[in-house]
Structure formats: C-alpha cells, structure tokens
Image (cartoon, rainbow, N blue to C red; front, side, top):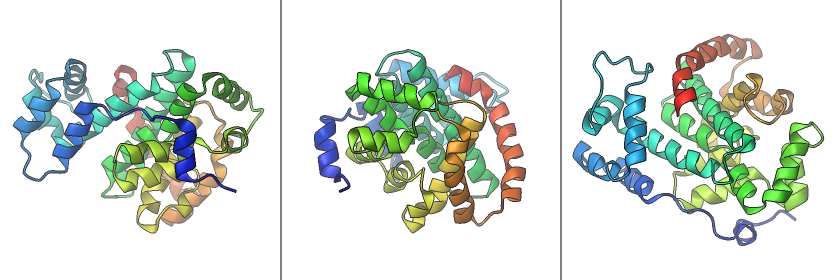
Length: 282
C-alpha cells in the first residue's frame, strides 16, 4: 500500500524550515503593493544573500556596462521575478549542503542548478510564460534527496553509491528501502514551505510528467527535460538512459517529436554555455 503524505512526514520527522528572509521575500513577491525599497530592506539583513545578488547582477548573463554596486541597483537590474529565483536558489543551496560539503552534496547542487538553467532554456525555446517557474522547479526537483541524505546518512549514502555504480534504479531502490522516494519527500518539503502548488507538482512528478495535474504538465515536462540535459552533460549521479521514459513523456506532453527536441537541445546547450559563469560561481 502506498505511503500517505501524513505517514511520510511522520517517518521523516521535522523538515528543515524555509529561511526567514526567503519566506519574507516570497510574501513580498506575491504582494502587488510591495516596493523595491521593501525588498531591499529585507534582503539587506542577510549579507551572504546580498553579496550573491550583487554577484549575479554583475555576471556576464546580464551584460551590464556599468558595475552594479548597490542592492537597489541590483534589484532594479534583475527584477522581482529573478530576485525571487535567486533567494530560493540560495535557500536550496544551503539545504543541498546540509549533509556536508563532500562530493555527493556538491554534485547534487550542480545537478540541480544545471537542471534549472536547462529547464528555463527549454521553457524559453517553446515560448512558455512559465520560464522562472521552470527554473525554480529545476532547482528543487531533487531536494528530497538532500533531505533523505540528512535524515538517513548511512542508509541513503549507501543507496546513492549503488545507484551511481549502476547497481540499482533510483526511484525503485528508494521505494524498496524507505517506502517513499525523493519526489515524495520533495513534495512534502515544498508543501511545508508553502511554496506554490505548481512547484510542488513539478517536483513530485518530474519523473512522470504525464501524471502531473493538467495545468502543470508542461511545466513539469520542462523540468524533466532539464534533468535529462544535466545527466547528458554528465552533471549528476544517475545514468542518462534511466530517464528515457521521462523524456518520452515530456515530449508527448509538449506535443513535440524527437526531431524537434533534438533541434531545441542546441539552443539549450548554447544557453548553458552563456550561463556557465553562474554555474561556476553560484
């Protein structure tokens, strides 16, 4: 019998909270009456986040002629939507690193970031209005792995090694070992953080996009394709061929042929090349 969400959370114990600054920024981003100054005041209380935002505002991705020196300038340069993405990315990076700073944690974070950037590039290529959501869904798609690594370091570490060595299938092995998999854990975490339902669905169904709620199937497909691209570029712990069924589902959801996907991949790879500074420095 499948585990219920309530049983899952009970088995996991306390989930890590969303950092206070991130929660405040998300509330502001959803408030049509919020101002740049409101955002600046909240972000300025976190020196590390302020530094990260300034670094990104000055990255080659935005091609600024003049150096962005103040947080206000950075917010004006990036816009509310991108600021929200950076804040969630910072929160995600901290969570991906909670198990330590070893190879496994670093690879999980790099895989999440490349998946996010590739998913965003696919959304742009197919002229979707949900570009930033694809980025955020990509960032969070494997966050359940990090939580499981923190909660069950020995058991999950051994499982990850088996998956990496091709001795086990990821989702099936997680289900057999724990009774739930990382997509379910990610779903529980994002629900606990009160993040939008679209992100929750993209994380829960990124291995099975055709089963996401209809309104979020395309978004989930972009995350799935981003996940495939990351593994194709050897960024991550899994084997690219293990995602073949997910990619076929994503194409069916988007109504595209393998030939269209292949031609679009060239644009995505080019976008990743343009973003490589961000990948290296974040």
